[in-house]
Length: 330
Ligand code: ADP
Ligand code: MG
Image (tube, rainbow, N blue to C red; front, top):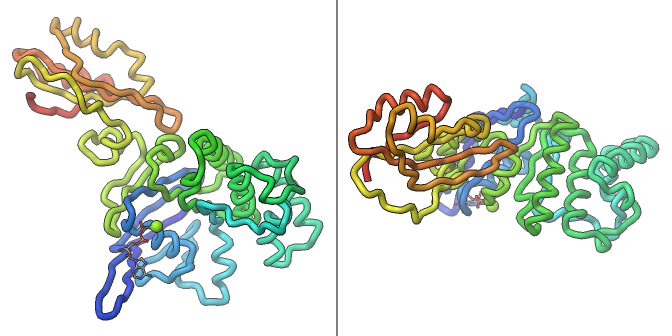
């Protein structure tokens, strides 16, 4: 588990102060994958540097499994850093070292005995699907394979947290999905906590259990995917499960509702059951269905006739577990 409390980072630029992080708090439980999204300048890189203790925060704390990392002395810093494994956009491998030697590097740094290193590297190569490539050099590997080496190297010291900074931003879509599948598999196998910093919503859709939106150094929206998705007015929901912009115009002034439901509920014939039960017609204005971290979600905008019993219909939908937002009339 990683707990970030009221993290602030202020940079001085001459006589000016730049507030890069304006009090960021966040908690990711063990075995969960959390995405942090935000535009350029939002503070993502600053957050990464503060979490990895490459940069000291101005105030606030970072704790891993209850142990505070932010107030350790300089000579404890190296041990503290080992609890967080880093994966970067580019794997930054040593070209003169083989795959196995690259993975071994962090273990050599801390003086691990040779036999132990060999065993660990063999295990990690298998874990990331590179057993046959131990002797290959980075120039002989594809971008996806190099990123696998980077991930194996990050795991060499058995960290509690895997912190991935734009891990797939340099990869093509197919390789991106393979790397995200690998991260999910590692999470399942090692029960490791994963933080993924990204500007790609696709990464959140594919891999994250929860997400935070960072803006001007603050988290402005956050929550489990199923929770942020239900807030159909929210920015995250509108990016994760947007309705097509060219929805047909309604023909009357009847009330408009946004419905949000998951695959399990979607197996119920929602529309026809409402239509039958309330003896009414429903007009579907727009809809989209998305697979988000292995769960199916549907977002539907419907319009009821002008004389429909809206409250009763909303109650009925909510009783079926559907999140309903009233959009007024259109
Ligand atoms: P992101 O990675 O989301 O693009 P950054 O963390 O790089 O955002 O930057 C957040 C803000 O902090 C920006 O306004 C940036 O100009 C400022 N900033 C980042 N690093 C420094 C620094 N070393 N000195 C001064 N300002 C900085
Ligand atoms: Mg950045």
